[in-house]
Image 1 (tube, helix red, strand yellow):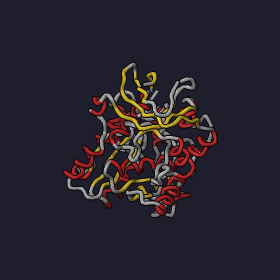
Image 2 (image 1 turned 30 degrees about the vertical axis):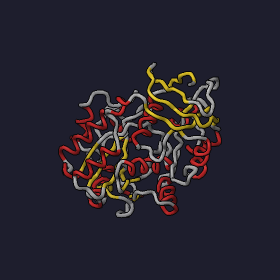
Image 3 (image 1 turned 120 degrees about the horizontal axis):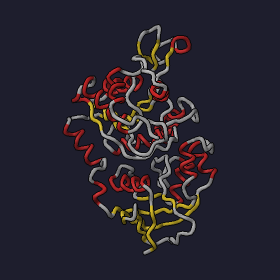
Image 4 (image 1 turned 180 degrees about the horizontal axis):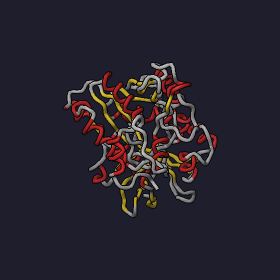
Length: 351
C-alpha cells in the first residue's frame, strides 16, 4: 500500500459520481490509453463515446507505481482507494484540444493548469459509503421516472436561474416528452456565476407557480463545470442518459464561456457524434430563444424573420449584469416572481 494521497472536493465528487454510475462507463480515473482516445477521438479506447477527460492529478514526487492500491484522503479522512494502472503527464497540446484554447482567461483552462500535470489512471472504490447518502444516483432517478409513469424524459442542464429563454426551451421539451427533468449544476462554478441557492430558489418558484407538478422533476447535479463548450454538451447528455433521460436539450453555446466557442459548435459536435455512434439518448438541438419586439413574444430564428432588426437577447449573463448594477431585469427576460425568489435566497453570486 502506497502512502495516502490527499484529494480535493471536485476529485472526491468525481469518485462518488463514478461509484454511482453517473459517469458510466467509467470505473475509475482514465488511464493514458483512454485519456488520449477521449482527447483525440471523443471516445474511450473501447470505442464508447466520452468527451471529457476525468483524471486524477498527483504531485511529481508522489511514489506511485502500477499494481499498487493507493489510499485517497479528503480533509485527512480515508475516503477511497485507487488500483493504479499507469501514470502519465498531460500536455498543453492536449488541453487545447479539450478547451479549444490555452487562454488563462478561460476558467476551465485556468483550473486545469493549476492542477498537477502528472495523472494516475485506475479503478476507484469508495471506502466511506456515507458519502453516497445524499448523492444523485441513477438507480433513484430511474425509479422516480418509472413511478411517475414517464416513458420519455427530457433532461435540462443549467447553471443559471430560469429565464424566459430557458423557459421557452423547456416548454418545447414538455410538448415532446412525458416529463422534464430539471437538473441544475450545484458543484464548482466560476466566480460571478449564480449560487446554487439562487438557482434552486428560482426553479422551485417556477415549478410551484407555473409548471404542472406532474410533468416536472428537479434535482441538483453535484459536479464541477468544465466550461468545455461542445465537449461538455455531449458529456452532459451522457450523464443524463445514465440518469434515465431519453432526451437531452442542447441549446446555443451550451457550457460555453466568454466567447471561446461558436454559438452552435455544440450542435455541430453533438450531431456529428450522434450520426456516427449510438449515444443512447436523443438530442434536442434547439436554437437560441430571444424576445422579438415585432412579434411581441419569445421566438427563435427558426420561427421569426426579425433576428437582425427586432431581437432582444436573453441570457444568464445579461441578467447577472442587470442584478449586479442594481437594476430590475425586464419581464420579457425574467419573470417578476423568479426575480423576487432570487433576491430572497441570500447570497446571489459566487464570490
